[in-house]
Image (cartoon, rainbow, N blue to C red; front, side, top):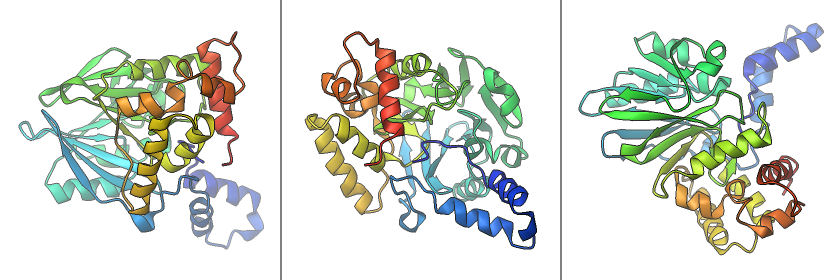
Length: 316
């Protein structure tokens, strides 16, 4: 399962080109595309069953959600009073531009959660129309076209709303989330998933656990917009480490029913994640601790690290 794995088509093109120079007359792009689409996440988000396009209305803005690439979700935030429109990450410029055109919205902001190509790949093309790119100052050299560098605990103005910047490093260093308390929603990129969290590519267990605790401290009714449809695979792992959690058992049934109908399982509510997401429950669930081999002497960041390693090797 990818869990935010940053493998781009260009990277694979370079790999194939250097490894198989005698085959240079082949259509390398076609070969790489076939290779990439053969390695989708185990959770099974396949474009033949696209979830319906949706728009949710909040106190001061609307959020349009749509699918991008193989398993990404794209988001546009629109303030109907000021006309400001923000793209949360830019997996694919053409898809975003199509969604903007459908609604008659003009892009003014690009909010990058982290630097991976499937979150920043459309930055430069989309900002050419005048949008400003916002992202972490700690990641400034890896965010294409960055205009406004943000630090943890900063605030930023978007339309009539104020975004709060949360440090959620762990999946990558410099990963941030955009929290809009007046609208009860947070955009978390690959830090927190529905029933999961991102792979720990650059951070440490202590860092990542601290990030997830910051997210967990948000109000229960906070809507969580994550970047990928990985929930089915995440649910399998969650059930393997906490099968006695009745809330999880019920949620797993709901998830399977939604996916069978081709419906998205994202967004979710913080209260759901607190009750069922194993990566938020290492300090409250003895069952999880026992099933990942944690001991009574382990600190909770060590417990988190053991949960993360268990998920990395899970083949359920």
